[in-house]
Image (tube, rainbow, N blue to C red; front, side, top):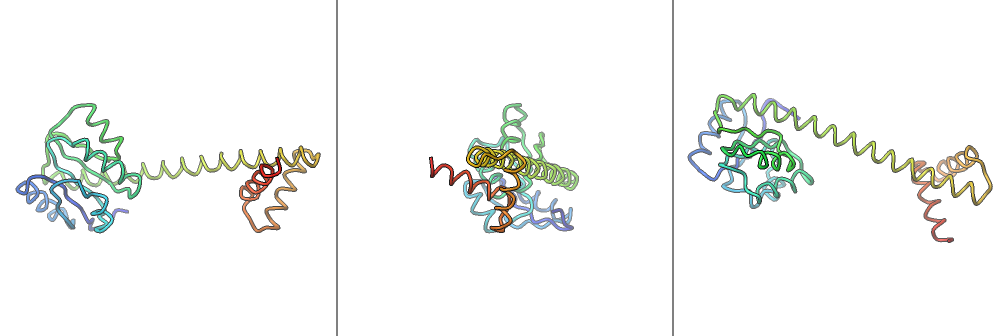
Length: 195
């Protein structure tokens, strides 16, 4: 994801601070694609602008901001950095749960922007990879349970042993040009209709 020039969306309620941030980002070699005063329209703005990174500078992230970030994390994940004065542990935990990749306390120094952005992007990419691994493992387990259930139905209805039921299920999948799990779902769905 990381490229030479990142497109960055800046959210800061103070215009004077936002100007300093934009200057620091430009010096770090990045492009500021928009500056927002708040996160109220965040999902729509992210969908429209498609930034690579979101940088928020605030005294403390509001509950609404964290809710907007959580929705965005689910639908359009992006690396999010928050520079804040608030160092309350619960606020930091809430921010991390909302998908924030870096929460930096004691404000923003333009000279620190590049390394903090690099760390946030790397952490975000690692988190996304773990999410994908979890989704793949969950799907594999779900498919395995479905296949076992379909084999059980075939064993009971046709009097087959487990190996023969697997062969029959595999043959059905090949005849229909389906994945094994899709054929298993068809067998389970058909068994429900007949019961």
